[in-house]
Length: 264
Image 1: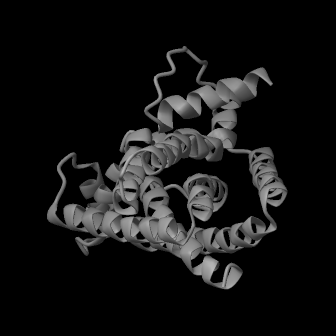
Image 2 (image 1 turned 135 degrees about the vertical axis):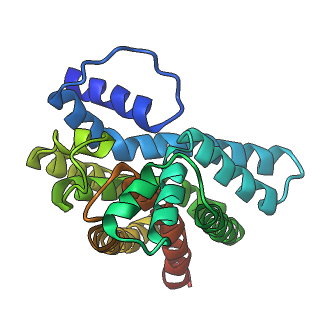
């Protein structure tokens, strides 16, 4: 239990903006705990935007348009923008149409190019549309999405650590991937089962939506793995960040589609 808590603290320190000031050993056991905790950090990041949206909609004249914007903004702030940076760097490299080695060099360049700016605007605009649409459909399903979407987008990272080769033997991705073990994968599948059990206890419709999202997350992994291998020769920290951000937008779209089938 102590190792799990230490891993959770590490995951919070690395992948969120929450100010947890505690020195944790950076050994493989703690890093494995951090990988296991990644999806739960996603839920933690979703709690504040969800509560903020509820407060503003319930106690102020704010429209669903404004609440959707705040939800997206607070979600980005909660992650510290680390994954959006990866999305922009990956976009710059991907759309450069250069050889793999040159693309890796572009991702390491701290400057952001035109493709990175254009792609992040398009990504966030698309996400905003579907967050807003979910709010219009039902606050209940919107609340489910605010928590489940970041959970599943980060669960995909665990699959990358398991099965996607590294593009380079350095960096944050190499650090965490080196600590991966089969037990980490089983623990994260256990995390998903826990989320499913909670969904069933709340409303069986949520279980159907969660099933849609899990299938979509599997597709997201397959697609992002293919892009990583073909364009960059494997996984990097920026590609992982792009997977989270692109995955969140993709999963919001899938969630909206799932409501058409589940809720009619």
